[in-house]
Length: 138
Image (cartoon, rainbow, N blue to C red; front, side, top):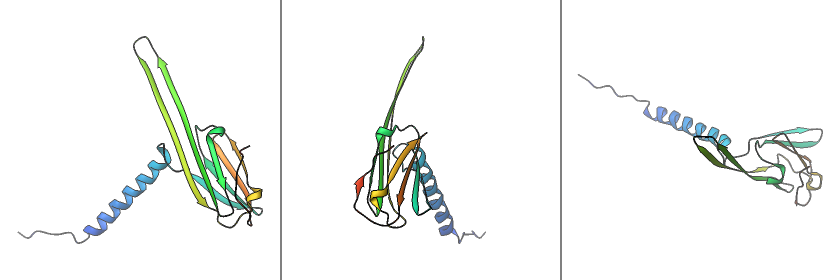
């Protein structure tokens, strides 16, 4: 009896590798330490960046920006303590986010503004260039 061999082994391995990489990317957005999921859009001469940062307080976020890039970092801590007649449970959770993006076009760093509400960080900047600075979150 003759043994058959698949000739598409490489294709199957490529598909498995791609699926593995996609699962890792999904995990980065869910697991603490992952990237900050963002949306970037342009409206009325401004570039608007929206970042989802659930469970993070405003004072735990740090923004640095210049005319070419924006860096978002945050570290949040949470402690859960639950006591019952039969058991005591105490968990600590630490969330760290970090993301650096290139502006789609040069922005004026003096016009960059940030606000944070309901777990969503929003950064707006007018296009054109200038010097970098730290950004205060409203």
